[in-house]
Structure formats: structure tokens, C-alpha cells
Image 1 (cartoon, helix red, strand yellow):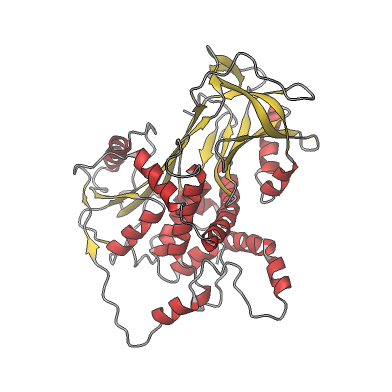
Image 2 (cartoon, rainbow, N blue to C red):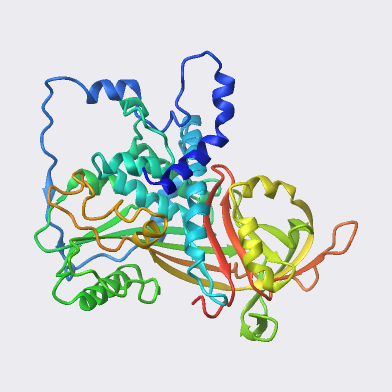
Length: 476
């Protein structure tokens, strides 16, 4: 296993060292035992002389075939229903996956952010990244499956069946994590948060995909769109067709996330995520307000304003402050602001670390009047590029064994994650004056210079989004 993959798994195990100490001389329990195959599952899988029929396959329809538009309200209702009958084990499993995707998220965010310019910003989805890698794990055979499991952070060195990751359990937990983000007490609640995930599987003509693999993706991406098109004759035209297709099906204005297609690829795996949050009690200020990109340059942007009791922490040692604003009963928006604009990169390096959630315990409630930009952030990144920068360029390369996706010798091209992140007021007008609680007046917190953000779901402790806002206009 390459060093990058081992370091990620080792970091996770360090956090779980207490489990081994507490166990003493008792029977060994895998630190992620809720995510690996159970003994009964293994017995079934390893039954001798049991012939397994070949998986049924199908050829994706051409990309020009008629497709129904994405119904985001229906997707929201489906996510909410998935959380209504959760058992304790389901929640524990979601917490284990949350731990893993947070670790990988920080690791890959650091790699990705180093490619961003000083005045550029973007948003990153650890959930989409982890879901994509888990999907490839589900479609992989050894040795690719073992390498992917190690990179996902789950140790399985002894190759015993009961230490092998059950990818379908992980995908189901990812659906739970998404559902917990938007759930607000049942499907009848007003949907203030929308989270929609769509997967596009784009194949060369004639390539057959295995039905169990595609059907298994529905846990985290209820809408999976397998489509075929000519990827080799005109790669630029192929990219344009894919962008137009996804725009027509989703209605999301993501720009042109796919710029070119490798002519020798036979499969593209693209994940598209749309998040829309509405901040309760916030209103859109009239006119446009200044946002200082640096000490000498400003741009005019729409701003939101609201007053309430939020959690806050000013860290004088690291020259940053954090404001936590509730987006729903389960979900928080974390806004991290450097005390000095030039320190943004330093603050980013200090903040988005594996001890992030521990440090957020320093926040305490206080009355705050918050002013911040209305946000529309767009980002697309190729997982193949991130893997290459993580010193794993061959993980999904030509030699990858993806025999559970197709019997053909797949050549995986771009593996795109595209995010559209929207944050706006809830539409309610703020009252003329807000009653102040007893004690000090409301603290003025104004985000009119570069800052960082994170969206946290508290039950699973999963970080759904990490982002940097250097210029709200350039992020569109």
C-alpha cells in the first residue's frame, strides 16, 4: 500500500487506540466491526460447492435518450423517510462512517486547496468523495479492493472475511448521514435544507455494466443515470454533451464542470451534489455591500443579516474566530474568520485538522448580530488528479480490477465530483428591532473579508462541506 493510504488509516487507528486498551484480554473486536462482514455473512459467502450465477448486465441507453427531470422535493422526502426508522446500530454505523469520511475529507481538502489561487475559493464535499471511493470499492476485486479499503481507512491486512469492508453497509450509512442532515422531525416538516445527489455513469458504446453494481448505488444516489456516448472521436464534444445532459436533467447551473474527456477512457463516474440552505431569521440587506478580497481590493455582493444567540469562540493564539449558526435541528454552519485577512492560509492549515471537532467544543453561546455574503459556490474536481497528488495514481488506473462493475477491461477516465452550494435568507423579513438578552449587547460579527466555512451534521458528526470564500463573485 502506498504511504498516503497507510497514513490515513493509521491516523484513524490512533484515535481508536483506546478501544484496544479497554478490551484487554477479551476477544478481538474490529475497530469498525459494524462496517465489516459479519460471521454469518462470511459463512454464506464462503460456502463450498455453491455456484454463483453470473451477474445480469445491461447496455446503457444513448445519452440522447429522453430522461425525466430530477425532482428534488421527492429526493428530500426519500432521505427523510430513510431516517424515520433508524435503530441504535444504524446511528452507530453512521458515526463510524462519519469519522472515516472526516479524516479523508481533511486529508484530501489539504491537497485540493493547495491548487486554489490566493484570491479564489471553492467548496468541497467529503461525503461525495467518500461515496465515490466506496462505490469503486463495491465494484472492485482484489488487489484493487484491498487497496481501496486501506485508503478508506479501514484496516484489513489479515485478509480474513470478517475484516473485509461491507461496501453496501457503508453506502447505506452514507444515505443515513445525508438523511440526518435534512431531517427536521419527519417528512411533514418544512424543508429548509435540500440535499440532492445524482450520479452519471457515462460509458463507451456497447460496454455492458453489471446491474447489481448500478442498483447498489441507489443508497447514496437515488438517481443514477447510466448513459452511453462516443468518448473517443471528439473528446471535447463528448464533454459538451455530458454537461448539456446533466444541465437538462438536473436544472442546476453548475457551469461546465467537465472540460475534456480522455479519448481512451471507457467509463466516466461523475457525482453531482446540490445543497441549498436557508438561514432562519436572516434577511437580505438592501443593495450591495463591500466585500474586501484583500487589503486594497473590494467587490460589491449581496449580504445577509440576522441576530440571535449563536455559539462563538475567539482564538487569540491562532488569530481566528468561529461562529456557529444552526441551519436546522441537526445541522450547523461553522464560519471561521481570520483576525487578519493575509492569515487566511495559516488559519486554514490550523483549523481544518483532525482535531477540528474537538476544538469546536470551545464555543459558547452569546448574542450576535451576524452579517455575511449570500453564497453560491461551485466547484468541480477530478478524483483521479487528487489520487495522483496523494501518490496513488494507479488506484483507479488501467490496471485496476473493477470486475464487479463490468466484465470488460474498463479504462476509467475522469472521476468528477461537482458541487453547487447555495446559502440564502429564509425569506422572512427581520423585525425592525430585536430584543436583546440580559447582559452585554449583541456582538457584531461581519464577514466582509475572506473566511472559511464548514457544514456539520451533529448526530453522525459528519462534515458535509468544507470551503473557502476568498471572493464571493469568483466562486460563481
